[in-house]
Amino acid sequence: MLTHRNTNIALIALVALFLWLSLPWWAFVLLFLAYSGALVWGAMQIQSGFFLKAVCAADTTKKVVALTFDDGPLTAFTPQILDILQKAQAPAAFFCIGNRIAGQEALLKRIDAEGHVIGNHSFSHHFWFDLFPASKMLAELQQVDNTIEQVTGKRPRLFRPPYGVTNPNVRRAVNRGNYTAVGWNIRSLDTVAKGADELMNRILSRLQPGAVILMHDSIPLTVEILPALIAHIREQGYTIKRIDQLLNIPAYA
Image 1 (cartoon, rainbow, N blue to C red):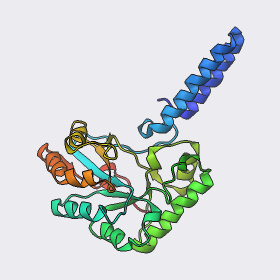
Image 2 (image 1 turned 120 degrees about the horizontal axis):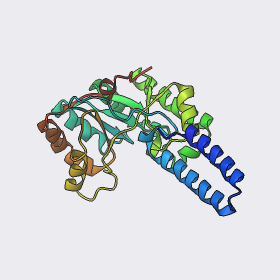
Image 3 (image 1 turned 180 degrees about the vertical axis):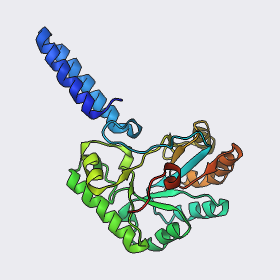
């Protein structure tokens, strides 16, 4: 398995070998370009476990999946998604941005009261979140925890990194805060999908036992397709489970 640690070991070994062989300077440039490429790939692929071990799917042959929604709570779309889930009796996980909770406390309470999991998705969801020092990341995560606990009485343990980007600082913050990092293995790309058919086909074509499906409760197209998506998932013989039950991990501290 390719990880940050064994990539660093390989780099040191190859630099030593290149020096011993007296290779030209451009060989070292190519080596460091390849190394940089590996770091970028690892940062962008949460499923790889390159920087951080994240739970992205269940190891099972049973036809069970989990629905997850990022970036809420939002007045415009989260209530509609909750209405659909309630009617379909389908559980989900909502990875919430902390600075969107103020003024939406009733909505957060509804998510909890209707049996869904609430996870941590950072306080700011800042574009440069992955460049923050670990201490600042951890402070953000704890701020979200405190806010959610004040509203629901529950303190999240599940954390999904903004944009799914990981690096050594994210790993340190997760470890120091005793979080479980959660990813996905079906990325709907609902934020960029051009139509309902495209979005539906992308999810259903990747359906597999133990899948964790990533969507957003900030996208009107997701609201549009959700009733049919749930119906199609069940028509294919799948059961929708809460993510903590699917992955067999505690949702709260």
